[in-house]
Length: 92
Image (tube, rainbow, N blue to C red; front, side):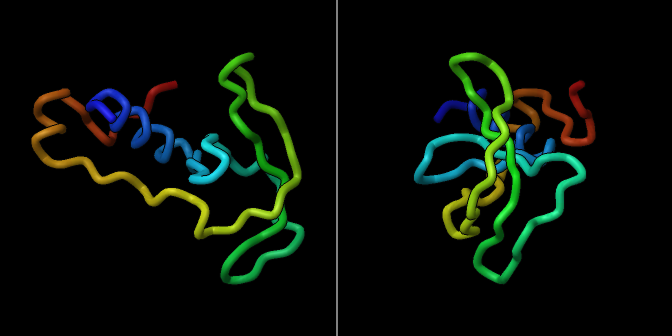
């Protein structure tokens, strides 16, 4: 992807969203919800999917396999200067 997409992905990770590799959606754990079941490779939890067509979060209980989640993207130091990105800055 381009630089803007990479920066958006980093910011979504900063806001506790994860990208699901197979489903091609961003998900986050529902607030104040602990996993129903959790082991080393997956957990059963209520999460939100981001519905980009309707621009909203949609709750869903799912079996979340950790190996199906993208790793946190790394920004090369050149990106920090080129895009004037400050990782300490949080958008609200």
